[in-house]
Image 1 (cartoon, rainbow, N blue to C red):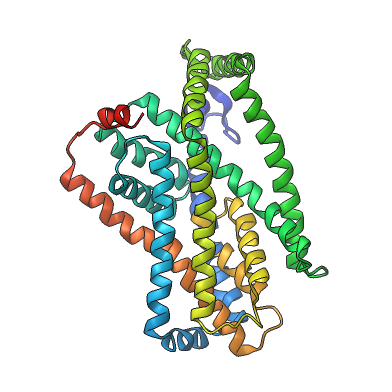
Image 2 (cartoon, rainbow, N blue to C red):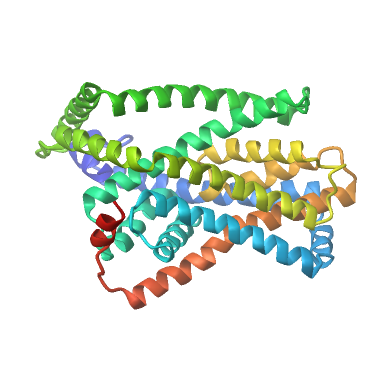
Length: 377
């Protein structure tokens, strides 16, 4: 799409008589998209985290990890994965849990490794689900509803955590991290309220959906005119149809989706808290309230699309916040706990996702889920 705009004379910085200037611009943007995450990771793992705690101390903490705590941490990670799978199964009636697991792991692996991996992961999910008979219409509803629920949860979590900490008198003021958390929670809460109002109105008022569809059709017409192509004329109708399908799904499964979304949040928090205890961080040094605040801070940092899955950004920010005021040994233990939790929630799904995708490719057989969907409904 960008290349076509450049061919039409809209390329920025294109010199007369030198076609291909836009191509250089595209290459430059791609280079930035690759180099920026690399630079952030180098800064985080090569400078920030070693300055906070030596990797020698972190490795020492891992060596001191007992087998009993290792089993508990792995059990917490398994619970977290299961809750992710239940979320997908709740959004697709009739989908077996094993297939929900395969889709979740494969798409998460892509999202955690590829720049702008969220869009690519949608393609992976479509390939797998369509091979099992899911229609384009059902997939669109699944993608839209789960994406919406997940986004609203990410926006609401920091504000909920701040309110809980303030109500229990455990919100410590005056530190930069807490100020960042409060500011991020405020911004996220504002976006959440506006988004929730718009979504609620669109779902409850068919006229609002019609207006959104007409607006989308107008923007599509303008875009395709720039591209010198004919725009599809069914966009407005597709928006209304999507709204009707989403309403039907939410009427039947909104409670399951909400509970599964809350379970996703609690699953990650369970892994994080268990990792802190396993690495020898006592409640006296990092109490549950600070762990909860750190989790909310990680949510705020995850909103920033700097690196895939927030790698580097979350580790640096989370370890720095939780280890503030601790001695050298405590900082090493906290950093080790952050690495352990992120390894189980970020790196482990990459490995399992690669295996799940390879298994799907080897055993791929189109077995429709439409009949099981109808039976479930």
